[in-house]
Amino acid sequence: MDSIIVYGSQYGTARRYAEKFAEMTGFPAVGYRERPDLSGYRRVILFGGLYAGGVLGLKEAAREVGGQAELLIATVGLADVTDPRNIANIRKAARRQLPAAAAGRVRFFHLRGGIDYQKLSFKHRTMMTLLYHKAKNLPPEKQDAEVRAMIETFGKKVDFVDFQALSPLLEAIRETEGD
Ligand SMILES: Cc1cc2nc3c(=O)[nH]c(=O)nc-3n(C[C@H](O)[C@H](O)[C@H](O)COP(=O)(O)O)c2cc1C
Image (cartoon, rainbow, N blue to C red; front, side):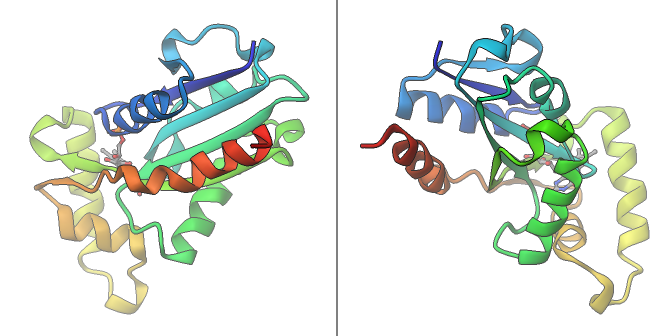
């Protein structure tokens, strides 16, 4: 078995990226709860929504990926992914979800998702409301990209999904295919 796309998506943005990437590559895409045993795959590409720093589905997928396999992780979050501090934070948190053996073999990619407050679960809406009230009182110099994104989008419906942003991931696949 060769390559598989796995996604961890609560509200559909990571799934949309995963399904588009499946179309672009011909690899199958499955939700992480429905994943087959991943140990037989040479390459696993995980698209995961960011939830309080963690990447949805990463812990479950990473522990199954074989010792020789490639693991490509595409995070999907609200905050600006051109901000180097945000990227560093995302990677630091994601590495905590990886078994030590996998940590040296991963490649990261970062995508922007979206949010629709009307569709949030009660638990998620409550969490975001608490975070928002805490964040909005921070002085601007203490607001990082994540905090700014949360303040700017609070209560709204926003969609930053951009399939062009999949190009570096496609390029990475092409490099290892050797064509
Ligand atoms: C409870 C909660 C926590 C979140 N935490 C983060 C976060 O730490 N960083 C971030 O960039 N986005 C965060 N987001 C935004 C989601 O990552 C964003 O909505 C993403 O597109 C969700 O992916 P999904 O639609 O595939 O579930 C959070 C959203 C919710 C509801």
